[in-house]
Length: 317
Image (cartoon, rainbow, N blue to C red; front, side):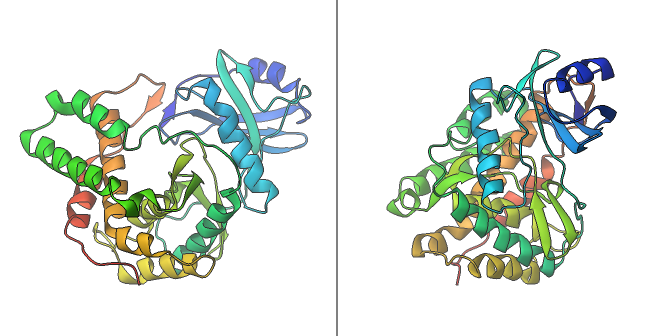
């Protein structure tokens, strides 16, 4: 949980005066997430989410907001940014770039069912197709270029067995990314962080996606693997539950078919998604930032997922 920048009611009222969002009624800090500061904001004209961007370079912020705008305009259920009266999608608030987006209905689901997974798979495929013509997107800041950098910084703080695991998996991923298969995987702007707490359901068949601040250019297969590693776990385990996994993949296939390179690369993509979040959670735990509220997530969860996915073989069917 994290609130890095505290905003007073008066600061928020002054900032909202430049928007057609109505008068402030209530602002409540959101005690979730580990990257940005977020508030629920109620005004006389609606319900919103205020985000103060903490680490993302300001030059990247237009991409994230314009991607949300692009997807929302194409019928994807996601937050839509509200421009101020000067047409800006973000502006300074208490020293940080801040943006106001529509607040979606629904609740996150902890215990996913196959129905939830099938609906998420279909929505993810729709998102990929909708983003295909979005235009250039920045590289994944926590992607393959960052992994060796993170490992080098973490190395003095890791036990030898963990250093060996990370180095071995990094080498395997680099070898895969040198293949024609990987280079030909379909890719575009993707969310790259669709965990269960970033999806709201009004019913098991109606998901909407929030928190696009890790969005980047990456493969559609990686984006799907991120979802699978979080949504499709067996109860009280890190192995993949067949019913949930099949439902996720069937939902995706109902909108878009996998190409042969994606079928062959599925297990490596699951491993890549596990490595990414294991390293980032290690980094947040062992090299933390200060925050008004901060509770780093347990990296051992993704260590166990990575070890399990390294035992898998086979292709998508």
